Length: 429
Image (cartoon, one colour):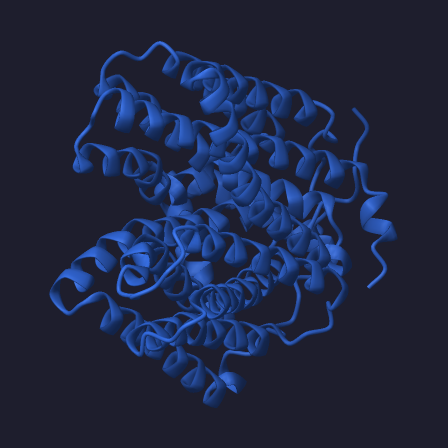
């Protein structure tokens, strides 16, 4: 597909520019925090694991609530405010002298990240026409995967050269720069609706409570078969990805001969795979989303399942096949993430986007919490190789069942009419 119109969309370019800057900053601080707490303070394994939980739990708990807020208030203002507050919190981390101060700061950062994500997705709906949405989501996926590779690498260099404290200052500055970029986003514009719908909406606004609005996000997802089943596939794939990420080093220990750098190769290959699948999907936009997701789910299961089988038989050339299977898992994971998010964007009215993506973010974040915990528990109980094989097989079985029932969950739902789904255009600043 021709990306010319998307690349000429200044509002979209501004939004993804801010996303890229803040995403790199996120990874900078995570590596710096773990270095500071784990090495300098000699924290216990449990204390280190709570670091990631402090970031993830608020997004899982408050995602739906934040989605309602994103649909009620000015999204641009919410994003800028969230960036400014997170900049302040990360700045305070540089002066933390107890682990509880770190936990409090990170929990607060997670809360404001929970607000930022649905507001960003809702703003994206305003800025990008449906014809360009699939390419837009592919580019977003490319940014996410590339920052996951570059961020830790850059952070490791900076922490080694300057220590953890300057990295916190740099991360704080990335949030400030992101907020500055967001100031140039188009102002909020009035949603174009038919007169009758406008009257009904005003009536609903007066009579509907905050909690009913909160429930409406879940109701909307339940009423759309693709969103409901797609969210199941997305959550399951992400859970297995997180499970595998947390246990892959344990799996590789089972090999008789393995390069010390094999873990790094596998992680990099998975990230590169996701990046390249995003690049592919920027051009290939005429896909059936449910078929693409099913290919992705089976690919993730196949990649990690084969990695476990090859480890069980202790095959040689582990650097080659482990890197290849990690790449396959990462590449096909992009086939799950991009089509789902793009189709949800296209089939959700602009006034519901925040609530719907609040629900989606809550489910995906919950998967990132449960995945490592489940992986550790299963690997302890039944062993790491059976854990990889079983979870991979479950994903493949899910994709086969989905293929059989695909006519009931086809993602080619009728799009919300343009006048109902988005704003009339970009206003000037």
